[in-house]
Image (cartoon, rainbow, N blue to C red; front, side, top):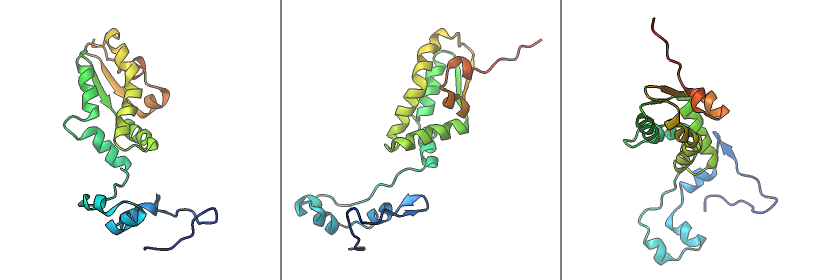
Length: 161
C-alpha cells in the first residue's frame, strides 16, 4: 500500500533515518485494513477501536521515568537507604548510564527495574552491616562502570576541628 519492495535475500535493508529505522515511520501509518490484510480476522480487528504504534523510549524519556513519577525507582532506592539511616544520591551521568543500559535491553521502561536490581542488589544486602547511619552514598557513572560497591560510593565525611 505504501510502497512495494522486494523481500528475501536480494531485498534492500531497512534505512536508518536520524538514528531510527524507517519501520517506525511505516508503523505510524498502519490502518485496520492493513491488519486484516496481514491475516487478522475482521471481527477481531473490529474489537480494536484504535490502532496505535508504540515507539521506543528515548534516553531522556527513560531518565524521566526513573526520576519523575511519585513512586519512581530512584525514590524507592533512596527510601530503602534511608531506612538504614543513610542517604543515597544518583549523579546525572549515572542516571543516563542506567537509561542506556535499559535501552540496550529493548524492553522499554520495564528494563529500568532489571538494571536497577542488578546495580543495587549487592549494595542493599551489604548496607545493614556497613555502619551506614548518617552516611552518604553517591552513585556515579564511573561507579556503575566499575560495578558499584558501598565502600567505593561512600562519601568521606570531613572531620571538624
